Amino acid sequence: MTDKENDMSTVVALKPGMPLGEAKPAPVAVAKIAVAPAAEKVGAGETAAPHSEALRDFLRAAIPPLFGFGLLLGIWALVAMKNASIPGPMQTWDAAAKLFADPFYRNGPNDQGIGWNVLASLQRVAIGFGVAAAIGIPMGFLLGRFTFMNRMLDPIISLLRPVSPLAWLPIGLLVFQKADPAATWTIFICSIWPMILNTAEGVRRVPQDYLNVARVLGLPETKIITRILFPAVLPYMLTGIRLSIGTAWLVIVAAEMLTGGVGIGFWVWDEWNNLKVEHIVIAIFVIGIVGLALEQMLLLLARRFSYETR
Amino acid sequence: MNALVKIEKVGQTFNTKSGRFTALRDIDLQIKQGEVVSLIGHSGCGKSTLLNLIAGLALPTIGVLLCEDREIPGPGPERAVVFQNHSLLPWMSCFENVMLGVEQVFGRKEGKPKLKARVEAALAMVHMEHAMHKYPHEISGGMKQRVGIARAFAMEPKILLMDEPFGALDALTRAALQDEMNGVMAKTGATVVLVTHDVDEAVLLSDRIVMMTNGPAATIGEILEVKLPRPRDRLELAHDPAFAGYRAAVFEFLYRKQLKKAA
Image (cartoon, rainbow over all chains, first blue to last red; front, side, top):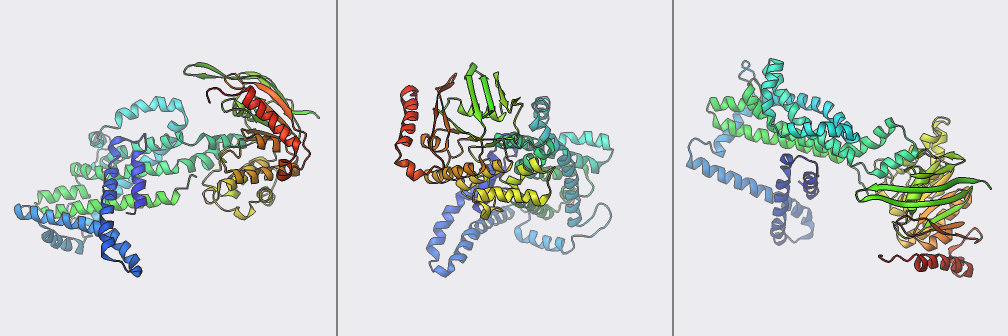
């Protein structure tokens, strides 16, 4: 991560109107900033030749994270040595090599490669999330544009938002009569709140100047929406999308543990039943990497659509 | 000449948390075709409120505002506004920003090439043709304001309303833009209402200077007619005793008769 990104996620996290529980990325970013100056001092002493400027920058960026991962591996190895039931890094590495040699095998519905499991989870997230976006973003526009709608729906949203999406799982099972759409349903529930709230906040924060411009130019409502509101709200919308995809990826693991079938969450639970602890550790890394990839993808998208305000 | 805008017995009251607040009272003013009128006064004297009333962005509590003898019902492109902070839309290039208004006003009658020519002419008038396809964040504050002026002019408004258009700029850029405005006004014969707190700017640009008393319940204190010949040259005027006289008259009003105690 560059410093700019860190700044960005910090700013995003501090945006008012954002649900508190979803502000998790901020401490991570702050911690990384705090580490950086220490690394700089180390780097400055080591290399002084001018042509190695690029190398020095690279080392400055690469050394602290490597150090962090080294520390993690060290602690992990130490814990594994003390406790025989926890697999060590090497043991896990061997298991991972075997597992990723064939990630897309199929031996019946309950024994499939890790690739299929990840894809199944991603599919659920995509559907639940897509439906949430299709409903949540227009709703956010309505809430932001019309005070009446906001006053009408805000208490309901405030009441439902703190509820764990897993509490909605039985309702989903009841309505859909099947495990798979019920898991998707929980994703829908957890994704929709940040999308509604951030979009509404974005609409509310469209500068009055822009709306005055629209009024003076005499723009019709359709043009106000497409040429002024939508571009002005887009960065907020993308923040909402980023927050909800993060939560969705957190929730899908838990939901699949409960519903079973195919999916990375179910796979974790299955491997626990098989007592293949090294596979659980691998799953933790896989979940982390996929989550990180999703977040980075959306950050990239957000940067593509961000404009300089001044 | 007949008055383009008539303001009759206009007052504006706002409902605030601490009760009703009267911003303006008893405003009577007529603005003639082709005239440049400045509104000047200390901050909080309601000069921007008056401009917003003419723009139609706000409606008066009492009294009536007429444009070509019809009541002003709300904002519209025939009363174009140049906003203090340029208010260009950051996701559109300069060309697109100007086009947004042009399309709205002339889009039904004219084809694409004609509209494009209008936008280009407007940008050329403020010497911004070289930065036509740049985005607002890529150009300086003065250049943004030039584009803001081009956007307003391109709609061929009956009257141009400027709300402290050069207030956010440094002194040199401001002078350059004032000269630019003098040129544009001479070329187009535009009717302009200019809100300002800069005495030199008011004297340099205006045919009449409307001096407003302090708020709350501000109203028109004095009206000064500026009979300097046009075109006006900044350097020549600097040594012109008539210019100095007008300047002194405005200062006299602002700093002797309407000195703000709290400020």
